[in-house]
Length: 266
Image (tube, rainbow, N blue to C red; front, side, top):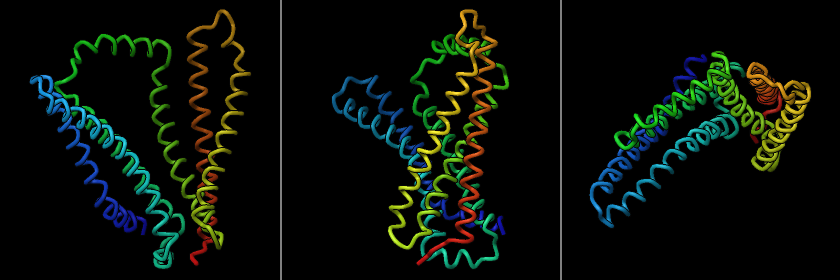
């Protein structure tokens, strides 16, 4: 049943997400075109269109992320918290399958949006940036980075970003589910619970960060080494992943229990 839910969700969201990616590519090409024309011809009209294309390009890149997040959260709300919930919860699917179908699709489109934005930046700057002049600085940066951080740091960073994305969506799901377990002011309560959960996460993370710094006395010694800094950064990254994973598990359990026991569609 999970595969059927995923198929339906991908189809429903693709109707919006694919045009968004087309807009990103179109804005990038438009930006590239007017940048080239304005550099070649000294024209007031072209200068106006160049500034306009820059604004459109930036707004489109930011908008792609906003639309992705907004659509994924809205789909959870619309399918499970409105009248559609009466139909969705009569399907032969478990609560876990219902939650995972939304989460998997949300994460998939998030990754695709990041790739679309990166591709958009590449298309927008194609032929405009002299990468040969930047390459020495990039090489120097990566060589210094490799000298401080071990090779396993980048995979850890990627895992941390992925777990953070999972945690972010489950935070929305938990807040919406909890807010809609009440009879009145459901949306207002959902927003309130979202900020309350976010504040709680920040507080716990701050406390843990303070303890990690206090316990790392060797970082503040005069003879601090690159190995000590590297070890601290690796430990911090692992700690961040564990915290995000812990929060994600809590939010998942909250969402699951509320959808199964306290759902109020009235």
